[in-house]
Image (cartoon, rainbow, N blue to C red; front, side):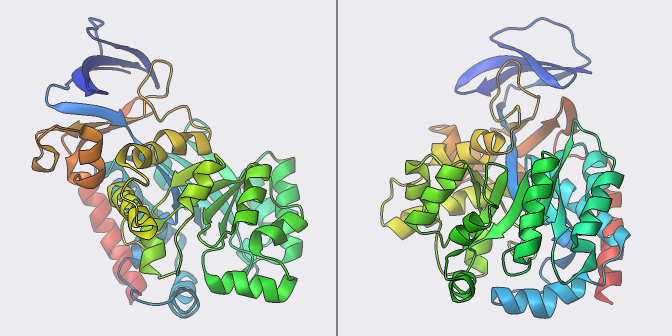
Length: 413
């Protein structure tokens, strides 16, 4: 399939974009090549689509279910008991709604950690978006055991153009030292990334010090877990020594500002320390039970404002930097051939409606996108050279919402 976008605003210049199959073939002032689909970009800006670095997609089922609670009571008393009752089809429809929400808010890649990964893969591939899907490890459920992980990996089928797999130890407080070490060895042998929650709360750090006489990053370093394949979500309680270790080992970090604020984790990611060390950083929403949306527009704005407020410095994390973290930096963190609209890149991009009242006047489009826009400003979403949404319409969205509501209601009963 081929797509020709005519006269869209690309980095403040009107350009045509020609897409063939899954790639951006040409970006130029005038392209006359015929295409299967022709889209007018006259009142639109073309921007890279968003990379959501940390999600639990099927937690759309728990949106608004257990709000205004502290993290551990929230997990232990509400989330984990309810998740234990979820059926495979619940997780499938929860993930379908998540994919719909991401498409409508401009996200074409998400990094997911949840039970029944086959259902999330099924939902994502049917929806046409890219993903890194984790095989969740956790000690209190046999589904998260090394034996089950090994069995699942050998049995999962997926579209390698859209989906990749990872090993996902939940956290240092839910996975034993032995199983963390196993995960590291297994991931290395199978050339898989690892995705883990890390240093999300003060209690996690203090418990680690009491148990191991070390902070979390030092503990993971001591057991040989840390290396370039590690993707660590949250990381708000890292000290300077731990950041040095992350830099040394090539660890990649994911910032989740809305979730961190909502769960009141008590600290803010050390953006200045991370950027000074050039540690790879992406942005994520977390799940819908702790955000409560998958809208990267919200997280971009709040990430920027949080850093300015925390540092009492309005120049910290300007609009262009957080936009890059949500796009090109996120693409680098996950080794994607995207994040910029340029020839040879995968055709993962958005058309933003410049006539939306939130985007006028056009003094600075990127500032408008970060500080003013919301998902309603996204007109068209393209992933892997396929039009997933145009004119804010996604094929089959009414059925997805109807089926999702049936499963959410059943789970609530």
